[in-house]
Image (cartoon, rainbow, N blue to C red; front, side):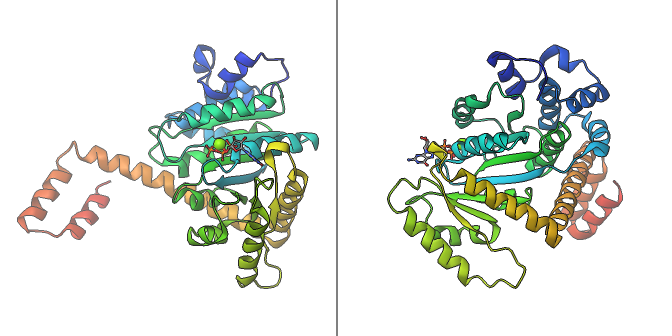
Length: 338
Ligand SMILES: Nc1nc2c(ncn2[C@@H]2O[C@H](COP(=O)(O)OP(=O)(O)OP(=O)(O)O)[C@@H](O)[C@H]2O)c(=O)[nH]1
Ligand SMILES: [Mg+2]
C-alpha cells in the first residue's frame, strides 16, 4: 500500500516480520499517521503490536478509531486443502481488476504461533508481492489474552485505516474456527470441494447456518455438480422468510481463476443486501460487542491473576477449603475486590 517501489525482500519484511528497529522506535501517533498514508512497514508494525498485545495498543486503537472507513470484511473458511489460499489469490486479482485495494489476513486459530502451512500461502501469494494495492499478512495471537476474538478485529481496523476496501480473512476450518470467523466477518464464504466436505458433513458441522456464500471449488474434479446440487437442495429446505438472504452456491476452479467473477458478483450482492436490510449494521454492532467483552474479560483475567500474588485469593481459597464460605460467595468477593 505504499507509493514507493519495493523489492520482494522488503515485502516479506513488511508482510510477515516486525518492521525492525526503524518501526520499533516510532510512536503510536507516528505509526498511525504512516499507516494512513499506506506505508506497509507501519501497517506491519501495528499488526505486530496487535499480535503481541502490546501495552501501546490502547493508544493505537484510540488513534485509529476516528479514521475507520468500513471496509468489507470477507471471512473465508473451509477444510484444509480445499483451496482457500488459491481462491483468496484469485479474489485479490479480481478485486484489483475492479480498482479496489485489498487486504488479506491469514489467521491461524489452531496454534499460537504461525505454522508451516502459511509458508505455502506466502509462495502462493507471490503473484501479488509487488502490487501496492495489496497487503498480505499472517497473524497468530501469541500472548494475546483476548485470543483471536480480540486480536482479529484490531488487525482488521489497522487494515481498514490503511486504505483497504476489501479485507479477506482466511482461516482454516477446524472445529469451532469456522463458526468463530462468521462472527468476525460481514460476509462468510465457505469453501467446499467435491469428495472433501460434502453437503451432509457441512450440515453436521453447522456450516449451513454460518455461510452467506458457498463455493464448490475444484469444480474441475468429478462430483462437483452433485456436491453443488446437494447443497442447494439442503438450502431450499432451510426456512427463510421474505427479504432474507439465500446463500448462493458458486462453482469455481480457483487454480485457473474460473468462476471468480461470479463469486465477486455474489459477494457484492451480499454486501448490497447487508446495507439495504440493516443486517450489516447489526453484524458490526454484534462484532463490536464481542470485542468489548473479549477485552474486558482479558482485563479481568489479568487483574485476577495479579490477585494471586496478594492475600485476597489465598484467604478466600482457605475459607472455601475450611467450609467457612462457599465458592460462589468467594467469587463474588473476589470480583468485588478488583
Ligand atoms: N484441481 C484443482 N486443484 C486446486 C483448485 N484450487 C486449488 N487447488 C489445489 O489444491 C491444493 C490446496 O490449495 P490451497 O489453496 O493451498 O488450499 P488451502 O485451503 O488454502 O489449504 P490450507 O491453508 O492448508 O488449509 C493446491 O495444490 C492447489 O493448487 C482447483 O480449483 N482445482
Ligand atoms: Mg491456505
